[in-house]
Length: 174
Image 1 (cartoon, rainbow, N blue to C red):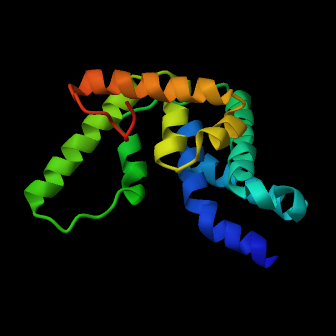
Image 2 (tube, rainbow, N blue to C red; image 1 turned 90 degrees about the vertical axis):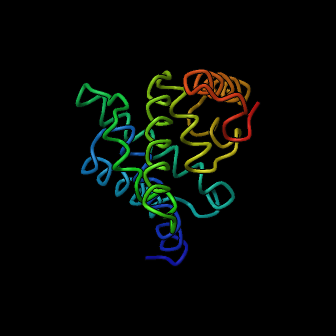
């Protein structure tokens, strides 16, 4: 395997697995989707994807996941069970058990609020905050305009703040 593909695998495999799991609702299906994504990368022209590797991978992964979901005629709604799949994305805490319980409770409330958003809002918020993609990159991945991405994120965070009773912005957004 080429070094650049191996490097991409190390850097993007876990985030793509998390993303594909949310889209497909199945860790096993997500594994197949991510494997297909990297197989496509192996046959891609390095010069054509090098400057936008992350968005390219997310786009291929998204398209493959949606194809699989269409074939299976189902899309997973966000449920509380998704928290278990996110466990590897949360930083470990070295605090007391009560701090850990408090963190778990807050994360649970945030996930529940996220679950109340539209599918598009959930997807762009996940791409922004779990995968650190820019609005432009999210636009490339989803096919939405950059302004629509911004609107979806803004309105989604606003709705989450209302549900959570938070007066200060979530995620640094206003």
